[in-house]
Length: 281
Ligand code: AMP
Image (cartoon, rainbow, N blue to C red):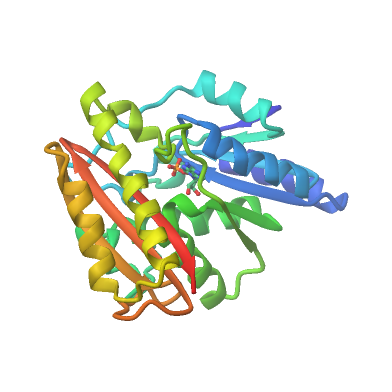
């Protein structure tokens, strides 16, 4: 496995590989890799000649007062985890390398970035889309792999790729969970023992909602209320949002029909967790 920190160097290396006909799969991450990231890397490695993992805690997708400074970082462990999952290349640039002095350009995807997580994290998706497009231009992957864990991000990146005529094929992969159901996240490490227990309410309430729909419930308000009530039983949980939306437009739906996304964000102290469920009726 090779590690690159400089844009010019990884570009030169990958262009040579591409000239030899090698295909490239990119997995953009912020590091502190877990089984969720590794599932993406494995798939990228299986479907391409070269799996590239980027590790970059992207400052411009963090809002003021968010956890950019304290976001967990462990590059040595990440290198092992990435290599173990089949990565051939790591790209781990410094912030200055991605955003040098004089940097001025940002990618703005309208509307679908202003709801759900975008409502409480203004600028988040602008930052994420900008970093991802830069990575697409640096790596020029055939395919890029994203987790459904960040369902809105996947929708935004797909929209961006289509709108800007990108050739990158966006692959969205299933959510990987702990044995008890908690969606894996680098941020889970922030949780205290009690918060970790209560955080189970996210996946449990989504499962319950899925069962309600299987049993015939079609009223989105009722589904949201049932989720709300279940999560609210936990005194450390502060609900940011619970939404039932169309999977592509991310617009609220009243009636559950077709493919819908049930998405939620809940804070435990300073830790904001997200989870979601896609349902097809
Ligand atoms: P992050 O490092 O949190 O920015 O995540 C990098 C990529 O890994 C994103 O596409 C995430 O959606 C994906 N990812 C994070 N957690 C999971 C998970 N539990 N299951 C599947 N994909 C995940």
